[in-house]
Amino acid sequence: MEIITKYFSDFTDIQINQFAQLETLYKEWNEKINVISRKDIDSLYEKHVLHSLSIAVICPFDKGAEILDIGTGGGFPGIPLAIFFPDVQFLLVDSIGKKIKIVQEIANAIGLKNVTAIHTRAEDIKGRTFDFAVSRAVAPLADLWRWGNPLIKRGQKSAELPNGLICLKGGDLNKEIMESGLKKIVQAWEVNSIFPEPAFAEKYLIYVPKL
Image (cartoon, rainbow, N blue to C red; front, side):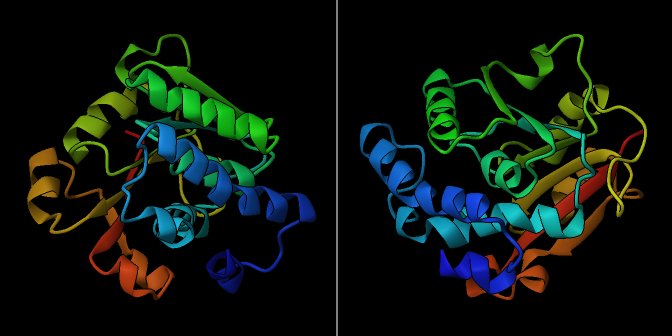
């Protein structure tokens, strides 16, 4: 928890309490269903929560924005972002039902009112659009863009960036970006430049504006 307050100092008491509850809740659920790597569970706040919050630094969402978290897994980046932005609405989706159950249980346990979690695939969502789609280490950029772009509406619900896709990635992204056909419009940031921590070496935040 200290690593979160190292970089952010203006949380409300409610937000601090919500962040503080995550460790116990995730450890309890991880004993039943492995949603976080066993080797990473003790680094939850750094490798999962703070990593997710790099999106908040680069792209602070406006009040009333609607965000889709594609392939949320155990709730990342959606749950940390929903705590950070209580006036923003989040839809967290995953194709694995037991992971969505955990997301729902954790959101309920910490009193998140701005999170809806659904067992579905992004490509099966009909009749809804969002200001931004976010994702963390789920699929190649080409697939994320194919799923996300039709669900993103035009506009700008952030002071920093127009609506689009934001994803957290690791490793050598040159080939992945080339294969996506998006090289001319992709922007990338090193997470290590946002939060200078060893765990974020070769971790990147990728942004593609809505087309």
